[in-house]
Image (cartoon, rainbow, N blue to C red; front, top):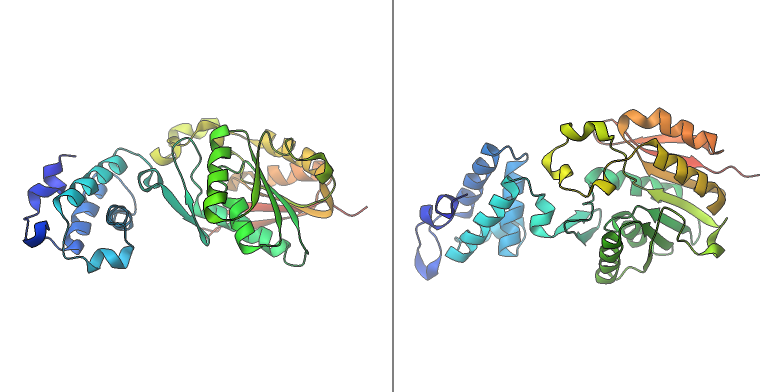
Length: 298
């Protein structure tokens, strides 16, 4: 995007080096530009990018008298990055998730709002459990593990991921948020300390579940994610359930995010490993999104 169109060229400079264009006009023009490039939620996106550039919140945007030429230039660059398909969170470098804000970066899956339902389901299940032991597999940025620890401080929280980049970022987020979560590199439950076997109260995860055949139907921001964190299928659930049986205490739960059309298949995979009472949690669009199943008591 030429800087003259959204940047300085159309913003007359007033006093103190700021443009005479009001923030509401800047947002409107930016939203129109985003719409022309097929970006959804154009107004919230424009506001989020502008608040990032200005280092303020939404209210702070509209309290401004205008943008400096440097701010206009930086905003134009941010819009360009979003318009060519770069995820909004990669441009801003962060993502809100329930009550926390996480650092995000290319190479590690960006947490989605629907995954907050997984955290809510786990919180409900653990409400009556004292000092629970919980493991989050395929943790990515650490979103699920850190959100649970934030809202359930008495939990002892572990997280695992195959990706060294994800493990590094999850550890950074844990440190910056001041939330003690032990993050381990490895496949599913394999990296856990042996003394946790048979003691876990919950195994949680948002594994890669998008079918490879669906690649051509995915939006650009999903295709920008590392394939390892996006594409998968029933096999990863089967392996997780098989491992979880040995690691969970009797009465412990496994809770996983699912693709909405796979609810029946995933529930059957859990039942084959002896899990009982599978229930589904739906997202805001009414689609099955989270499966919760329990290891039975002897």
